[in-house]
Length: 383
Image 1: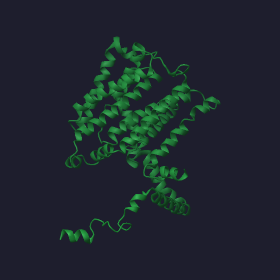
Image 2: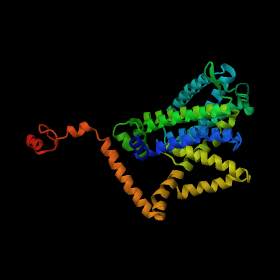
Image 3: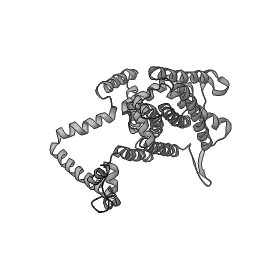
Image 4: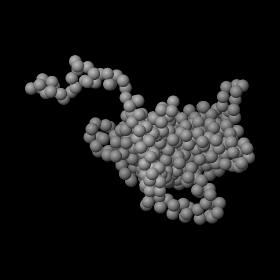
């Protein structure tokens, strides 16, 4: 068991599993409310951090892994928020029906926008996605009878989940927190599997060099459209959860919502999945803390953001890597060398343990009747 745990925490995908541990400890947040260390405000705030972290993760799929700078993520966030709220207010008080409608509608809208936008590149793609988001913003602002206009939609009910008699109400802040945490964990795990699949490798190839990916035979337009749809679905899901936390108004569709999602990605570190979630937590916590002292919090956050762009383009993840690779060895050289030797020995044992036995048995050295490719027998046959 310990060897398997070391594989996870020291293997090539160790960062993903460390983040799972982070989410586990984040899930202990309600215990502080239960023992009255802090108020229920922090439980609600923690729920908001998870929801907006999920929204930032959706942006990372399209921007960090596909290399497409979109200014329209707010369109899917707002569509999910309005679709979920309207379903619960007008159709049925069922969270599963609301989520199903949100996912289907987000998929349709994302496919349509992606079909029209993926045809162009660069700044034109960014501006076109921004135009779509602003179009939905104006629609929500002016359709008073359906969306509530500038007043938005209030009084969105929080339905119950479970099977009678084992029913839990999402109106309970503890239940809602763990429901959101469960959704974040499931989506995050699915995204980890996605980006490490052949499909995810193609997306990263497109991000690194689109022309080369197209040259070796991939239809990059189809892959980018699929990535755009996946990002839109996750964004819509985060918006539906946000509708259960607060009232819904046209601001969820405003371009500033998209800008905040981009800032969260840059704060945390794009192309990592966990970086944008951490960036969302740091950004919102800093915003809440600084705004409690001064009304000029945007100026201070802007200076911090410029500092990250200039000195740590990879965000908080980059700062951690720099600290681990440069600062720690300089401060504790003897400890670092000892840890390095132990890590090297552990890695060697993991690699040897992971080597399949049948590969060793079927090697040319173990069977005299087999000849490895490229040996003298092959060259003799070629002659």
